[in-house]
Amino acid sequence: MKIRTNKIMERILGQKSYEFVKEIVMLPAELENLVTLGFRAERDCILFKNVDYFGIGILDSDFGKTAYEDFENHIHIDNNSLDVIDEFEYLKVGLEFAKRIYAKLDSLFRNQFRIIVSYSETIYENEEINTYGGCVVRFYMIRSSCDDKYRVDDLDKYEDEGVLVIE
Image (cartoon, rainbow, N blue to C red; front, side):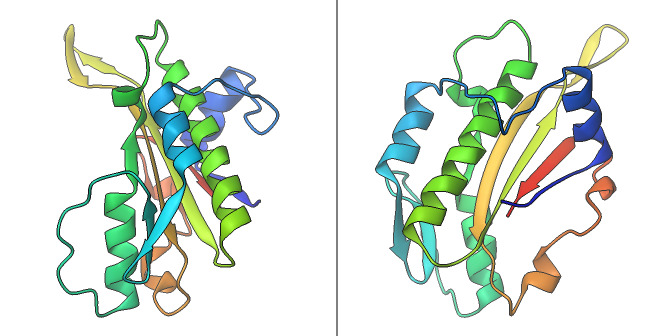
């Protein structure tokens, strides 16, 4: 498992002294169910097994398949977590969910996958909420024919959120 982060994620994890690889977090039932049920192959794409998907239309390129997986396999952790006191809990659950997705995909498929965790904290501006905090986990299969167009090498280009990538 190869892990990359941007400076924002490094700062957040460092401030909390949180080593997510070693930690184990209980997942909410909905997320645990997604991992347990696993994945399905559909038109050369790997998707969560029990999630309803929109009509995909024509998938005639690896780039289109990767974009489809990336879009459809994204889960908003804050929509699936119990009420939390500290927004950092969203990130902890998201990181655990990402680890479990990685392990399950790795055990079922020969392909390589990229799991991306993005996290933002609530930002206030003049006592009003400017940005709501949250965590999103997404994944897609790495396809060599289009990875140079899809992969982001410099994660610090994400200046407004913490980003962690597992491959």
